[in-house]
Length: 169
Image: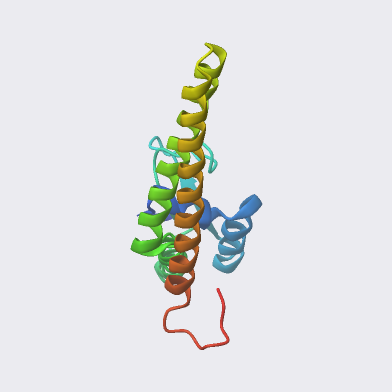
């Protein structure tokens, strides 16, 4: 019995979900494109198949029944192209959008903390302190909204840079 030819490819952890697709649609399409004699599997570190939810390793095994090296090469090119596309999709926000989203998240955290402290102050009878903390929470919320708006605009610019005027991604 001939062992199947195979090659293990690496896919960044963050891109594995995109490679698999919703309900496995992308990996099933890759499987179909590679043909019946081929197999495309996401593996764990022990050579076992895994699903996209228990991702520690990012090995993608491409195998072909028999010894058809041309068929294996064709399937490898297809899978490498899909991995490249999945990786390219990771930079959804761009540097500026990512920075602004992080700042907005920090303001959201600050707002939550201020509201919690305000509630504690109110419960302990410090109404003036509670008011001050509540006002600080509102300011953090306003900053968060402004940063999210700027982030949205930066992401829009990043996603549409170099595209025709009527193109919107």
